[in-house]
Length: 394
Image (tube, rainbow, N blue to C red; front, side, top):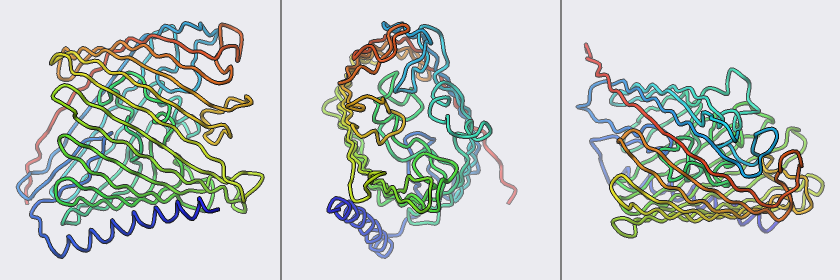
């Protein structure tokens, strides 16, 4: 129980920092420009009084071929979303996004498809699973904005759009962190580097509520040209029965540092607790960590390496349930080479190896017959941007 008190205290400190900063800066500063919160996985918008209304269209596609050394008979990989299918060509992710913005309002609608959607939205209805974003944001002023609707989540270093990531695949910890939310957010941008967010959503990556409780999240972010630090938290009830409280406490931290002109490093760390479904006075723990390193060898050629670790022996995260004695205890590494032959297009080749404490991988027709997993992935990525100016008659 001391862990719950400690985690609740952390969230209260975060909220106090956000509220205090808003109060102080609103009184001390006056901005002529409204700067909304920049979301990693969506179009970053900045507006001012002189910018006309604008429509922005963005489309994206990545497809790949994967050779899996285990040769599973169903040609499908567990414990990951991209790649989901192996030994065949496949669409990893595709989406189209339309954003309309004025000097104090932004509206975005986007639709997506691909094996990432098949895996990450598998519990949503057919109509809802293809909606990536359907949101609106009103910029109140002095860096403050109110946002609501279906939105990309604020957790995780890697998003769905692989071109914005360093690898063709995502680390397990970011693959199964919340990727989307349905709710409302209060965003605040302080000066040029600090951002804060308070969010109320339906739950842990769900568009449809499963109980009468709501998930509460907070975020503190520092972003400069050479340093990015992002710390988010969430508390939610994961029970589908209102009389049972399966509280989950989650902390998501990542950072990115430019060590030199060609080197970048990104450490990631997640940790969480959830009440035991049989003993409510007991807390089960999971954690994961990752280190990413990227080297820009030449202007069009880069190399990235990743090492990751995931520890969930009590099977808290439903996406990595193994039904084995030690649960999901995983170590893995990736090496990815990227050739960006065009500003909006590139090719990647990645090799990924994983080792589990238990036998959780399938070799041909033999289920749970191997502790090791190895595959090679070749991927093409394309995107297109188009701006359409809207002449105002006012």
